Image: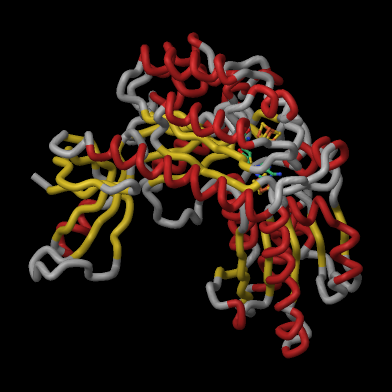
Length: 458
Ligand code: SAH
Ligand code: SF4
Ligand code: F3S
């Protein structure tokens, strides 16, 4: 703490700019905000122009080879900036940093520091030292030290809050447990205080994050339901969302209790990954397609209008046409509102990588992805079409700056979401648009596509 104060003092006369680029999941977005807060505290300002930065940070994702490759190629491109500006500091943070640590320092010698997923929070303290040699910190044992409050929050309506870090599931294909360490729940009071501060800053919706939010609190003897009930009491908070839910950990008690908590939105993200029992077993997912269908039915029995979304991997090693058809069939039976689909990407260190050859060609993976997405487009189009003519509560989140209609008076578009996480657009005048952001409004749905709804304001 003392060190931070000294730096604050030292930097008073200099304006230093930090550029942060975030890759990967929402938890990384949250982490980048935490890190940037720490930097703002010691005198940095954020810049969106990499050329003007004194400090460049990449907060990276290693979940698929492509994500890792993107981060490394952007890192490589900063070399020329460093040549022009020798004082420039460049740091690699997060999951790729954790995964490739030493290799990054070796292959990219111009990089000043590599901080893994538990060390990156200490960045403001590290910057306090004169860094004359590259630092590498990638331990997974350190407890994350306290969280900062959200004083410098970007003016947002909906904000992510990580409630559980790491993952102890070890799905065979997945690198997350290796780069993020074991499940660790955040303290319930700490989360509550943080959300209260957020709401005090104008936030209306919080999205609680974890690789598997349903086991929040297992390690500290608390239930997710208790946290949700506590957050529901916060005045001024309109909506609570949470994801991701692992199918094996969603049970009837949980669904009953979320039904009874008014601010929790009717949306659940439960990745099924594959519809083939043989593949699910090999993935170490710990449920069958039949159990998944049962859970979906149970959820819909309690909350009939709930939206359900999922993640699916195609081209997992040994996936046959029949296995893939099982995936399509599962999607058809469950009629899910949206899917996030991925081509299998072998990740060194994981069980699938060790034991199975990546034997499905790129062409087959791409073809399967296309077929899957076409099917989902049809399903989401049907679901969204069924909403035409209904009234929906929307929380307006953003003003779209581009003029999108020929209607001279109402030529601004605002975007928001229904409680079921569906994107809604409405045309409005600029005065009304600005006033609407952060407000709830019941609108009538006039048009629908597979991806969004268009509303008319009453
Ligand atoms: N914890 C969540 C999601 C983790 S990562 C869960 O259990 O579902 C987000 C998604 O990336 C996963 O759901 C999975 O669909 C995908 N994914 C993870 N590892 C992958 C890999 N090696 N190749 C392709 N997709 C992968
Ligand atoms: Fe990866 Fe499985 Fe953990 Fe999700 S639950 S992060 S897919 S290991
Ligand atoms: Fe990627 Fe790390 Fe998130 S690997 S998905 S950024 S936890």
